[in-house]
Image (cartoon, one colour):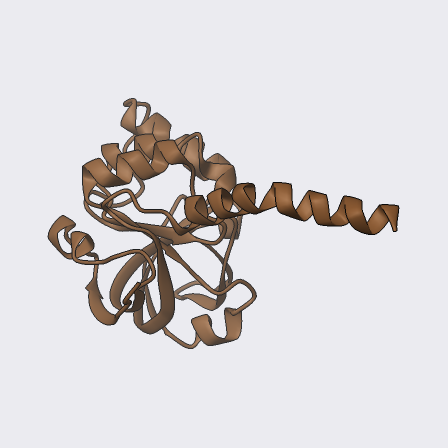
Length: 206
């Protein structure tokens, strides 16, 4: 499989997202929205149901499962570092958010399920996998805090819009055409399992 590295302006359009293929690398410039909160995702879905307005303009944007450590004063909100969090715990909410917010890029670490991948294919959206534990590298890309939504929530549960430069590289782990590296890995592991178990059994009987 031939892969490419792309430096791209965010937020992506659906057309931009569809140019990417699973395995490609992406370096990000522009604007992203981050949160690490399970309650935040539940609240975003309730916004789509009309319970309250969204905390900021989110249609057609980027939503990354990235936690942040911040400090704030009377006139300044500063993000000191960012780090990806596991996306799989958000599986129940992501298909609705991808479609309802018309997201064209989501990401974090650990991937998303088949229902989310199907929603991504319909919306023209990719899942970007960030280096787990790479907070020093990733944090260096943060240039400015543009907006902070739901300040009454815990800091890493808030919805934060950032301007970044050179964020990444991140891997296109699920592309907008339905190809998932996570699904590939699971299938390969399943194929290899009988031979592995037979080898372990033979070792046990020696």
